[in-house]
Length: 362
Ligand code: GN1
Ligand code: MG
Image (cartoon, rainbow, N blue to C red; front, side):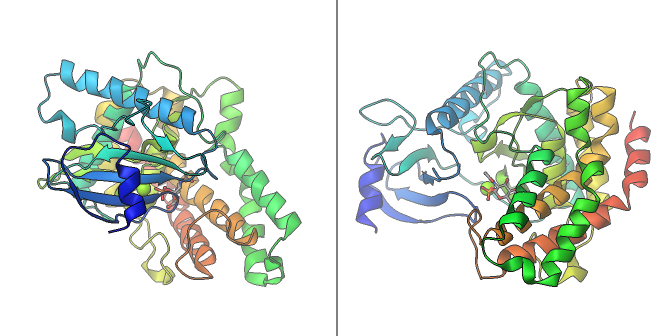
């Protein structure tokens, strides 16, 4: 066992003796470990990527407010097994804060949720439960009394993401613009820029609200029990005010993709309409009551926006010389870009079909 990690865990009030610490999950940003103990619970230890989350105080403030609020709601609703339905972060022993830092690295510990499963792909039935769960998550946070900040300012602002791509192209820090494949992707992305920046325009016109959203609703950020019911939404670092498109679109980006996020074989990458319909139906069942007509009509747009935005982000990182996402191999960001770009095209040709379905659910 890594003694340094064990020492870090020692700053938090874990019950029992630590018996093992090993890597957990496959997030692209933070480092995550499972901490096993001889006590009643195991724990999750995470090193917060401070290069990306510059204001850890704000980050943990958001998370504390959100988990406290959801816990109260669950209690008021008479839910049982609440510790498996909302994340529980441990206080650091001397400060009582939900993180510990030595000034260079930031760490936190939460209770590991027992008997929970994660998936990289879901069935239509599970997608329906997920839709309902995200609608509920947004509905539960609608009356959050605290003010949340943007842990990454303008995180899902498409105008900003397009600007970052433009800056990456202009700087060409890694000399990758010489590759015609990269240039073609850049051109194709800018050709759709205006269409894809519509949410920011609607926001400025005052016809699209921001609400508290999760903003990283990848399918693997959701814990399921053995019967396919959603236990809990994890990975709360990006919970912040955003358009509802964020949660709707990012879930479908991962769940409706018939291939992997980074599939090197583009033939595997298609947009699964059955998953779309099941997820949309579930989402509308819990979010339908608070969505405005503009939000609702633009849910198909959201399903295209997120593969597009992710393609833009992966490509910008590739052109910048891979400074943001963790890689498994040198061309990984380019492979990811191409897979997300294919998914965007597959979703986009189904816009009318998606709109018909949303209209029929009224
Ligand atoms: C990152 O942390 P993780 O791996 O769940 C990223 C998301 C991207 C996703 C792509 C803070 O999520 O925005 O959609 O990778 N998170 C951040 O897989 O940038
Ligand atoms: Mg994650």
